[in-house]
Image 1 (cartoon, rainbow, N blue to C red):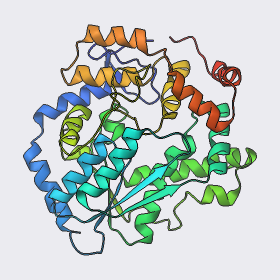
Image 2 (cartoon, rainbow, N blue to C red):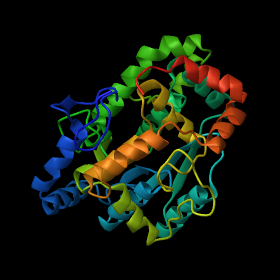
Image 3 (tube, rainbow, N blue to C red):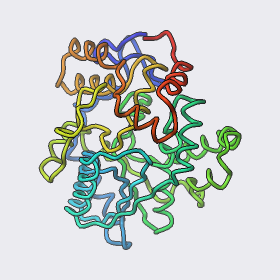
Length: 347
C-alpha cells in the first residue's frame, strides 16, 4: 500500500488516479484556488433559468436528510426553483436524528416529498447476494439511489435532477470536472445489465431488477447536475449551514465506533457495514475517506490523519454490525465468515 504524500489516502482505492506519490483527489482539490466561484454560481443561476417555473416541479432532488441534502435544497430554493424531493430507503434501523433531519428539511422548505421503499424481501435477498459475492452489501440500493430518481423525473416530466458532489472528480477517479452527470446514469444502467446474469442466478427475478431501471432509455433527459461544480464542496461547511436550520448530529444518541465524526452517513445504522467493507478488501474504510478530506481542507494535519487511519479504520461499530445481521439474517459468526473471504494482505 502506498499513501498519498499530501493527504495520506491509500492507492488501493479502485480507479483512483495516483501520480508521483499524489492522489487525484489532492490534485483536483488544488485546482479550486484557480476557480472563479462567483462566476460558477452565476452559471448555475443561468442554467436554472432554462427550467425555472416551466413545469409543476422544475427540479428533483434526491435527499437522505443529511447535511448535504440541506445544502442542495437550500441552494435550489434560493435559485427560485420548486423542487420535488425523493428518498430511496432501506430496511435497516434509522436513527432518531436522521428521521428528524429529513422531516425538518421537508417542513422547513414546505416541499413535497416521495419516499421509495424497496420491498423488504427484495432488499434482504439483494443485500445478502451482493455481500456474499462482491463484498458490497448495498450494491443494489446504491444503484437504486441514482436510477429511481431518474425514473421518477422522467415519469413526472421534471427536467432537472440535482445531486451533491461529482464523486469521480472530487475523490480522484477522474481528471475532468463537469457539472453534467447523465453519463453516470447511462454507465450505471449498462453495469446493471452486464450484471444481470449474476443477479438472476442469485434469485433476483428479471422483473425485480427491472423495477430499478428507467423504462425510458433516453439518458440525456432529464439533465443531471452536480452541485459541487458550482460551489466549493465541503461536508463541514454543509454541516455548519444545515445546523442553522435545525439539523441534528448523533450527539447523545449514538457514540459510533469506527469513525471520527458523528454527522456523515448517519441516517441508516447498518449502512456503516457497507462503508467498512472496504477495509478487508482494500485496507481502508470511511475513516480514511473523511480524514484525507479534512487534510485537504486544512482542518487536520497529515500526521493526525495517518494516526486515525491506523487506529480507527479497522473498527466496525457493534450496533451497525448487529443491525445488519438482524435485518439480513446472519449470526455474528456467519457475518465474519463472509468478511474473511474478502480479506487481502494490504493493511
